[in-house]
Image (cartoon, rainbow, N blue to C red):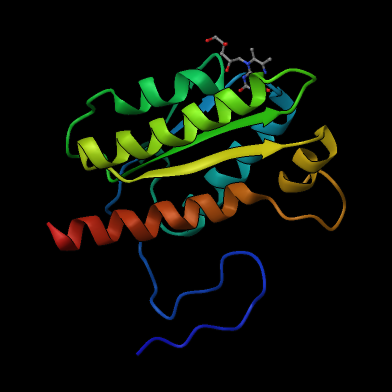
Length: 165
Ligand code: DLZ
């Protein structure tokens, strides 16, 4: 039986150690809200490397905005890809645009994950303000970079996918 620390928020440590040495990971990111995206992608890469993933096995791809993430995530890349981290940042404006894109992107990424079998990690911040996004990208002193959590999820799911197949 697994023992899990009782944290209120955030990804708690697993009692399993997941070694990323044999994994190939795609980081698919948007170019909207670039400073936040750069911080999230950097946090994800650093954590992948710390988890044993080789630098040459981390493939960086980009699309214009979050709406394009599901399309690009569904692109067949072959079974060698262990996991894909889709990173974007949606910030609410004054119209309904935010709600429609959040809904489409979250459903689209889940569909991509279920249909081609590659775990798709949901690395999309859906924020009401730019400050909320900065706080989730580790850009505010004392805040946490969620890109690190997404990388840990990618390594865990990548290892599980390999062991289950
Ligand atoms: C158009 C748009 C707007 C207003 N805001 C964002 C955003 O906050 N984050 C994001 O990732 N993308 C945004 N986009 C772009 C759309 O996701 C998409 O790229 C365009 O509508 C073209 O399909």
